[in-house]
Length: 126
Image (cartoon, rainbow, N blue to C red; front, top):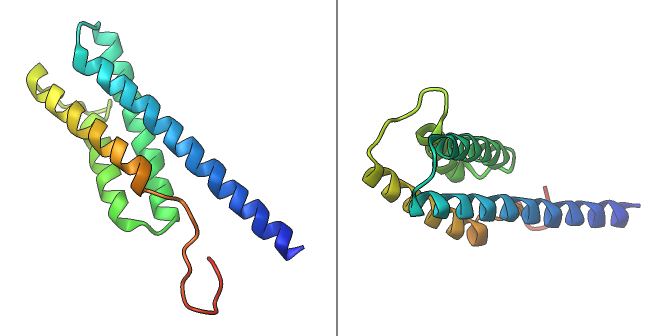
């Protein structure tokens, strides 16, 4: 029974990583489209909401997985893109912000993993 639970946990971690990577990839595409420009104001509002929700979710996941350094990055991005109290920056500034966030998302696909961490030798996994 314990082996089944470990396998189920492992499958859940793989699925969680897959979902996280898919969401980040979609956000990268949305940011790339924003960088190209020429969109209506509605697209940028949609982008703001999407990036905000994604980063609130990833900050929450980071907290649950005790990856406290990541909470700050995802929280800062959520703060910048928040649709409730929006920042009004010029187009050229937003292009830079979009590039930086897209690059951060790309890097986090490969570096922000949701795997279990071994605490101490002999204690097993969390």
